[in-house]
Amino acid sequence: MSLIAGIDVGGTKCLGVVLDAQREVTSEHDVLHQVRNPTPRADKLVDALEVLAGQLGDVQSLGVGVPGLITLDGVMRASPNIPGSVDVAVGPELSKRLGRQVNVDNDGNLAALAEWRYGAARGAKNMWMVTLGTGIGGGHVVNGVVQRGVNGFAGEIGHIVVNPDGPRCTCGRKGCWEVYASGRGLRMLAAGEAGESVIARARNGDADAVTVLEAWARWVAIGLSNLTNVSDPDVIVIGGGVSEAADIVMPIVQRWFVETLYSPEQRKHPDLRVAQLGEHAGAIGAALFGAMHA
Ligand SMILES: [Zn+2]
Image (cartoon, rainbow, N blue to C red; front, side, top):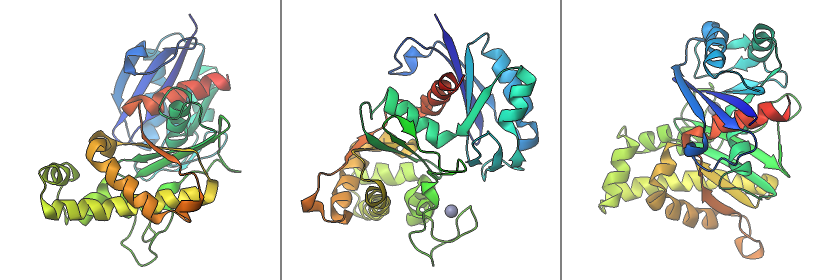
């Protein structure tokens, strides 16, 4: 058995997994071993990752996913969800301490890689992963290759501006897509009500809640149709907390997607699919990425 490990650094917790490189991973049951630790401040992040790597045991390779702007050599330039994260050399420092090459990429890119390889977008030629969580993360895989851009900063789709006069985003600019179409965006559109509560009311046919959900789904669809214009994908995978209510959310997003697509009658529409690997996608993708570059 050849064991490979991946770590996904989230805003609140770091999830580490160990996989068998020869075995397909179709659900969390195929994860051999997992460890969850709290995410520290940025100045303690490498220490925490060193400890977590030790807890994952003896493995052939290790990859790490980190939110924010990550350079191709694994330096975290900035990460709004991890306090103090400016120019943290996660990849180089961790490689030095562990005495092995550790590859680090953006968490959204790695979740996309996992969903392409083992999840909802298997076999897709050109896929986007869109994670609708507190913010919006994303990743783009073309012919099996994660599109990282020249500096490693590609796929920051949450910060596509959809309204230059809109409310302030965590990135400091105004009217980014995630201001409207993330879980936080749903709460804003619902005047402060939690997304779960809006969805529960919409399920019961509450007209006001349905109106809010329609407005939110329209913002989601506008972003998806923008991605379609940029890259002409065959599959777009929707993940994140919101996808847990896929039964009610996805039909509304799908309807608005057709409504907002450029020239919908003249094209094959990308398939909108719900993510399959859940909260493990980032860590599984990190393991795959580590093994690819070991
Ligand atoms: Zn932004």
